[in-house]
Amino acid sequence: MNATINLENKHFPVLLNELISIISPLYGGTFIDCTFGQGGYSEKILENEKNNIIAIDRDRDVLTSASKFRQRYKRRFKFYNTKFSQLNNINFKINNLKGIIFDLGYSLGQIKNSQKGLSFFDKGKLNMKMGINDFSANDVISSMDENNLAKTFKLFGDERYSKRIAREIVKKRQDKIIKTEDLVQIIDSVKKYQKTKIHNSTKVFQALRILVNKEISELINALINSFHLIPVGGIIAVVTFHSIEDKIVKFFFKHYSEQRNSSRYLPEAKVLEKCFQLINKKPILPSLSEIKQNPPSRSAKLRYGIKTNNNCDFNDFREKFKNLTDIEDLR
Image (cartoon, rainbow, N blue to C red; front, side, top):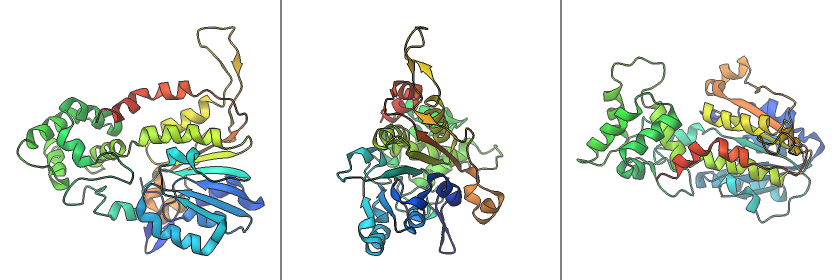
């Protein structure tokens, strides 16, 4: 699920060429990079002196990179250390906004940062906070009840053994604080006879990370706020790395690029205008050469939409994924 990764001190923003061809920064404008990271997308866009970037990232560890961009690009680069769901609250006049981009992956630097505790190869206290969080993975594992733990692992990780793993966690935490290596051991003990291509802990760790960072509600709110912020003709582009993210983004663009009645129960109800034009109905995938150069890019999918009008009601969107956002509120 890595996005911009660092191999041999080189950064590889996933689907960079494809993204640039979509947002067309050649003619100049302002672009919002909602997941700044190491700045791979921003740097490419800023190569054209007619372009400006407003960058957002909740991770304070990117402040060093952001500072270097400020020094290099001066007034053409603005950075805000905030959640991307809050992009509509940025207190800055935005001129000629052309595109809003999201890269939902985690960098190798973040995965390798043991203090963040995103990897099941880490040791010590569970964390997984990416910045501006209400709780940590340790809080979840230490206090969430068995039923809700199982729900989290099942819905956010599609973990087949969610109930058994939750039961073992609740039993073990009565005697000790469960650290990263302890959680891995618990999962291994439950799945010891299972042979899969992925690590036994992958799905549970994904589920915890999604919950701790409220990734579902963050994404939904960010997409809605992006729509309200960008003018007609502007582009919203999103790179996803796992099926839950992609399902949300796919619904957002597909559902609101179709004409619909204002009420499904009233055939004579007003026909709602399309909110997006889709040039590509299917996701754009990395080329074989990119996957060879950067293997983690193999799970990436790029979807985008061009805004076609200012009036859009997103109640259907919120309702569609309410079962997932409700899980985020269980803690």
